[in-house]
Amino acid sequence: MALFLRRGAALASRSIRAAAAASTAVHRLPSDGSLAGAGALAPTKLFLLESRRGFAKGKKSKDNGRGDTVQDTPDIGPTVKSAATQQMEASVVALSRELSKLRTGRASPGMLDHIIVETADVKVPLNRVAVVSVLDAHTLSVMPYDPSSMKSIEHAIISSPLGINPTPDGNRIIANIPPLTKENVQALCKVVTKSAEDFKQGIRRARQKALDTIKKSSSGMPKDDVKRLEKEIEELTKKFIKSADDMCKAKEKEISGN
Image (tube, rainbow, N blue to C red; front, top):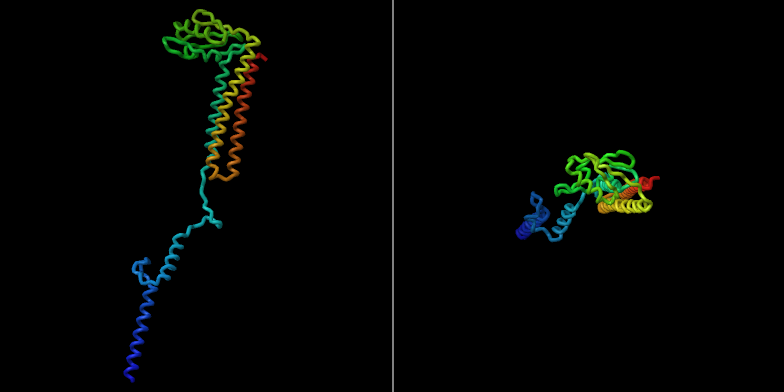
């Protein structure tokens, strides 16, 4: 009987040790932290372990208490305003050049600049083949660089719509500017108005292009900055429109002689 009891106790002891060893194997992972060799883990414990690891990998750092991501956006304001200014200035300069071609009742060197002279099968502006100067309020002097081109220059002036009849005077040409009739003045003022509107359209196109650029970039800009930049473009547009209007008023006054 005693022998039977001793054998039973030994068997029980071995069973307890085996159970303890199995429990330790279930909870221990390899030293490298991976799940290799952990196939003996219970499915439930494996799931919990993977969930915890997945959560840890999925964490993202927050830049502020609300978890918003802060991104630095470039300031497009100076670039947009600079491009718009250059385009608007180009329109005003082109308008000034166009108005200078219109004849007025007073002699002006620039009034012959748009006349094209054909010499040796080459067409060039008159101001590149001759020097134009003012003798008095109603008389221009045209001095050719090459005396042999006098006939060509004289023919070009006569063919222009200015209504000028030049006369040769030695090595130069004298161009008398006849006074404008009332009909001429009215027609020229209409030309000024049309020219002004054409070139102001260029200013407005520059404005719209700038506003489109701002709109495309607005998603990455604070709303206050967008509104401020749009307001600055509008003010810039008004400035150049006023400059064009003032230029045209001055030209109309010059044409009418008032």
